[in-house]
Figure 1 (cartoon, rainbow, N blue to C red):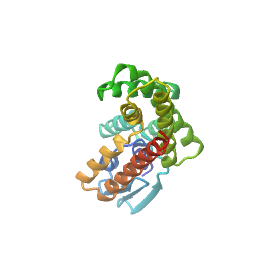
Figure 2 (figure 1 turned 30 degrees about the horizontal axis):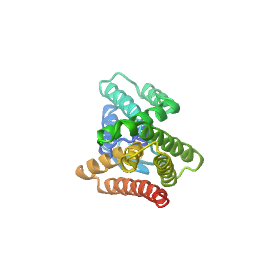
Figure 3 (figure 1 turned 180 degrees about the vertical axis):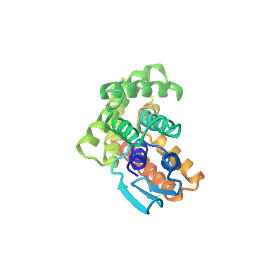
Figure 4 (figure 1 turned 90 degrees about the vertical axis):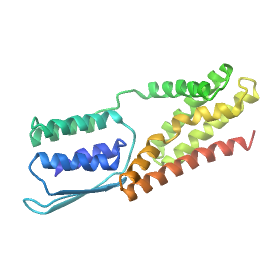
Length: 241
């Protein structure tokens, strides 16, 4: 029970699809001889139940979610090793604990730098001019930095997204007004791309297609609110342009 819940918790917190988490938990239980297991989850909680040797049901709450595909891959690897009989229950639990405690692979300064580079590359992809590459990269880096800082101070994703988008709008307006950039629309569009909840939208659609209606609608609502926050932040700054 503890191994299954820990694996599901790590995967759900790291941005995995609901059906993938449920399938992993059931496979782990079956590998240890528990065939009658049931799992039900939403983006904010996991309910797991086994019927043999006695009926037990547990619930854990998921308070924070992020995107960490490396942790999802590590849990999948541990699940495969369990299925092949390579890990005992205690060894599997220890391996999952190490994955849970693991720090992100990339430092925050590198993520900010890559967000800036990605913003500039998006500008070229959106047929912007090379002169605006640096303004887009600067606006994207500043916006992502603001998003990360605000989310640490105030753990409300809507406010963090709004603040990051507002920072991008402010930087874009200032650079265009002072002659450092030309196409303000493409600069803004490319700079907000690192903030766009692409994985959440994809997972929402995949969950809906897999029949997980509550999880799909919940993730879709989360993606809509995030997109609204980004749009509101940009609109607020453009009102001064």
